[in-house]
Length: 73
Image 1 (spheres, rainbow, N blue to C red):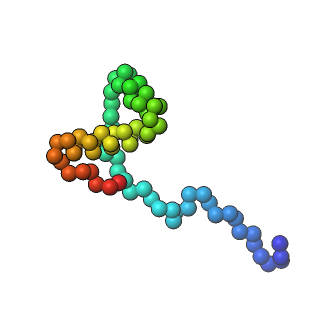
Image 2: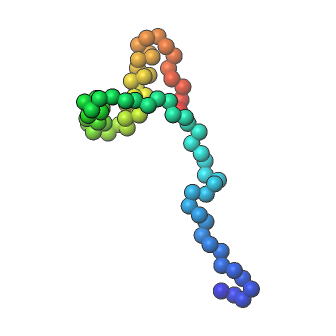
């Protein structure tokens, strides 16, 4: 280092200028152990996140019953 200078630290991880996720929680599902196992088995076969499986099911239900499609995330 040169005399009269200071060493600057590295930027901190997770800086405050990072974009924030503005989505909100929509639902919280509870079910029996058998229901949990069933959904887990679907996830393992399809590799689709459980939230995606639920979103797809809601969109299909809405279409079948004459409702508008859900908005984009």
